[in-house]
Image 1 (cartoon, helix red, strand yellow):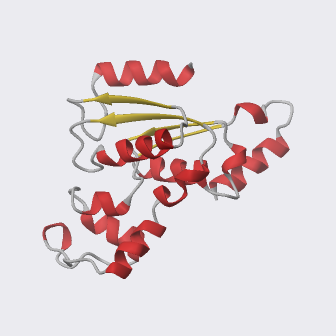
Image 2 (tube, rainbow, N blue to C red):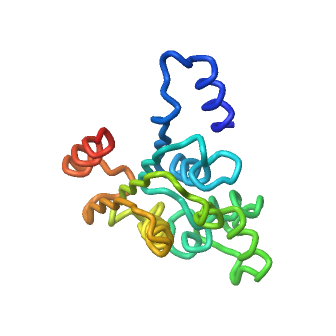
Length: 173
C-alpha cells in the first residue's frame, strides 16, 4: 500500500529523506489514491502536501458525467456497469449511492490537513472537473487553503503547453 511504502522509505532512508517534506502526486486514478492518502485517518499525517491532477474524488458525481461509468461502478460497487459504457443500471439505488460515497475520497475530505493543489482540465470527459471543484469546495468550506489551476481547453491528459508548464512549476514551489 502507498502509505506503508512511504513510511518504510522514511524509516530506511532517514538521512536522505525529510519527513516534513513528504508529498503525494497523482493524476486520474493516481489522484484518487492521493486524495485518499491526504484524508485517510491512518495515513494523513505522513503527507505535507498533495498535488492532484484531474482526480477522481466522488464516484457519485462522476457516474453521470463521465465517459467511463463502468469504471465507477466497478471501483465503488465491485460490479460491471450493465451494457458497458453505453448501457447502464439506472437508477442507482440508495444503498449503491451510499456505497459509492463510502468508496470515494470525498468521504474523508474533512480529515485533510496537508497543503493541496488541484490541476484540472476544463474539457476533461473522463474525470469531469466537477470532481476537483467539489474537493476544493469541501476544503474551502473548512477554511482549508487549496490552490486550483483549471485549464479550460485541456482534457484528461492536461497536455497543453500552458497547463504542463504552469502546473509543473507550481508543484516545485
